[in-house]
Amino acid sequence: MPEQSLPQATAPTGASAETPSSPGVSRRALLGTAGASGLVLGAAGAAVGYAAAPSQAAPLSSLGADMAMFHGKHQPGITDGLQAKGHLVAFDLAPGAGRREAAALLRRWSATAERLMAGESASSDDTYVARDAGPSSLTVTFGFGHSFFSRTGLEKQRPASLDPLPDFSSDHLDKARSDGDLWVQIGADDALVAFHALRAIQKDAGSAARVRWQMNGFNRTPGATAHPMTARNLMGQIDGTRNPKPADADFDKRIFVPASGSGDPAWMANGSYAVVRRIRMLLDDWEKLSLAAQENVIGRRKANGAPLSGGSETTAMDLEKTDAKGDLVVPLNAHARISRPDQNGGAAILRRPFSYHDGIDADGAPDAGLLFVCWQADPLRGFVPLQRKLDRGDALSKYIRHEASGLFAVPGGAAKGEYVGQRLLEG
Image 1 (tube, helix red, strand yellow):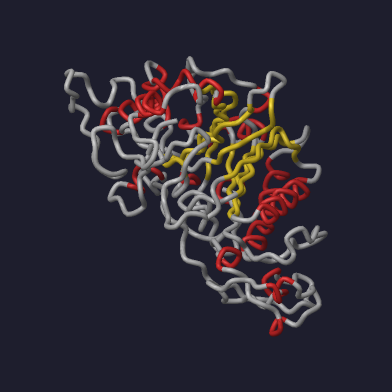
Image 2 (image 1 turned 120 degrees about the vertical axis):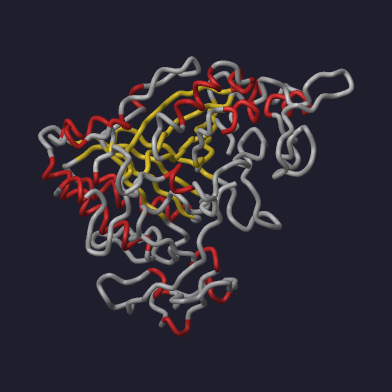
């Protein structure tokens, strides 16, 4: 789990609301929330029924009113801030389904994602699961796996960057929960909004595709801390300190495929590559370690994320500093040392994970860890060299196990009137 803080979510924007009598009634219109943010939903507002006129209803809290944009240069769900709830799901095209069926499916999915991200209901057969909620920072992101291109006769358009990842010594991969023709990432700050989107995407697949695997994750809810801060993982560590930021001069170069000159096919312009790994944390073993031992494994203070060499979370790590005995303060095999870009030829990734907990095993051990999602312009220059370095001597590797894996080409964002992947499927 290479360390690297995530960008903050974009400021909420208003969405046009439809009247309750219209067929595609907006969830936000039902509570009179168009353009509202920053207000707290009180007891009176909680009692308002579905039939109440928008002018009489209480506005949503800022959490529910936050909205990400579907259309843009890049797909949503990449640079947006971490959301409280996430679903990752992979699909395989049904037997006999090809390019035409895939294009129709991506057209349906894109239309549904656009509506739901705007706080509206699904276009048909809506379940009402999220009817009284706002957009809640919902994002829906789509990608293509290696096998998608042979299934659709588009092998010549398959990027070389989508070649299968190499094997790593920490891999204990379940093939049934790895890879897939199509991949969808769903994130939101409300669990019902996220589930509503998951169900709508699954229903839209119809007879064209079937679920291959699905995983559920979570993060701390925005606003749960006194001030915005880097997330913590289930080991209790601040996780993501050295994440590249959109303000960095080389951010786009590292994370997004350029419009030309990259060697990638034209349809991948402004897209990115997502590496997805289900990483189980061996928490029973980890929690037996003393605090000092845990900090030596990571190379940072557990309380505030500061490097063991001193300072605050954002202080540059002094890799040469020694203690009174002459030993390095940051151990040679510390995770934070090994995963640093300057220790890996500049390799960097944008980490945007979710934690997961899938119950308790028969022996009492929690099946819990990280749904690791990282973004880069080229996985062979991002994830692969970092993971190879970690594979050779990361102190953390003793306490984690990679149990599932996938690599997906995520095309650029859809322009207004387009669907995601249109330049590939209709090019």
